Image (cartoon, rainbow, N blue to C red; front, top):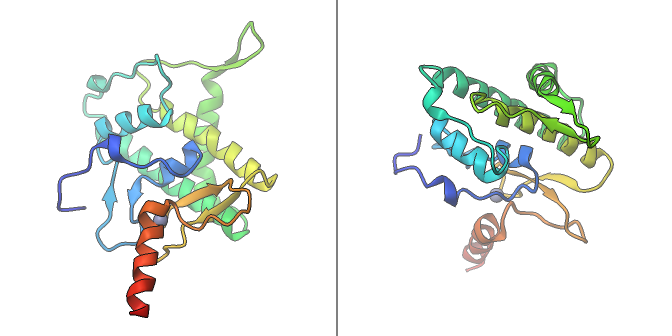
Length: 201
Ligand SMILES: [Zn+2]
């Protein structure tokens, strides 16, 4: 865990281009010795979910109803986040999706489908129970399926940030030339340029 005070959730970057990717990216510097988990508490998880759209505008989720459920909720959050990261990484590497993470993703997918219904307008709607603290996980599982499908259909290219020494973030490259290399130019891109300049000096 980081020693310094956790950064405000409002300052956490959403650079992945998809909800599921941003969820996998809620660990700052995944490969660093001292990782910072942006969503280490139920309150931060719910705040992040609201910011990223995993809780839609107008929906309320009441964290005060947790009643000792917090640890179990966070175990679910971490388990789906690890699975999401592994499945997206497998897609990037062009290998088969592994059974363990698939089991986790399929569990939340089933749970999501059970909360969905067809409306009079012919649209699929998610039933948002204010007591359902796992609603964001269901939305993320649904988005993960779409993200993998879009990547397979070449609507974008899933990539790992080129800063593999510490960052480990994933993003959907939607650039016209398909040459995006960094999760964000102002962080990893700039760090890499500074490094190159230092090596040349
Ligand atoms: Zn990066």
